[in-house]
Structures are given as structure tokens and as C-alpha cells.
Image (tube, rainbow, N blue to C red; front, side, top):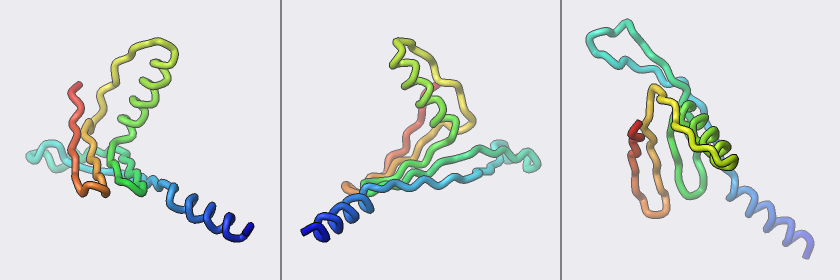
Length: 102
């Protein structure tokens, strides 16, 4: 009985894990100026129900706004280089492109 319970806990723990990959995203914002390469640190969070791809500045903004909201403060997010998020939902097989309007 103990072995079955232990096995079930391991299976539940494996399915609940999320993975985060960190990328250095490099891009050229102006096609006439190829020498001006910009970069942004991007996060890819993968879970059992879907994935989200977003910039590190968006992560810091979200964390700061949540912490300030708990203290009763309202703050505006700082503008990052890349304000878009790409969200995939594996359950309904949909892709969402979210653009922050700052």
C-alpha cells in the first residue's frame, strides 16, 4: 500500500512541474540599419496545460505590480522593449498573441 501511494505521489509531482527556458532574443528593429542589433532576455514557461513566451521586463513589471497591489499601491508598468506575449493553450489547441497597450 505504501508503494502505491508513493508511486502516485511521484506521478502527480512529475505532471505538476513547470519548466522555464531563458533566451537572449536578438533582433533588428529598423531594417535599414542592420548594424543596430538589439537584444532582450525572454522567458518561455512550459506547463502541462500550455506555454507562455514573454520578456523579462514583463516578468519584473508583473511581479512589481502584484507586490505593490498587496500594499495598496497602484503602479504603472515600465515600458520594455518587447511588450507582446505569446500564449499557447494545449487543452483547447489555441494560440493567443497578447499585446500590452502602454
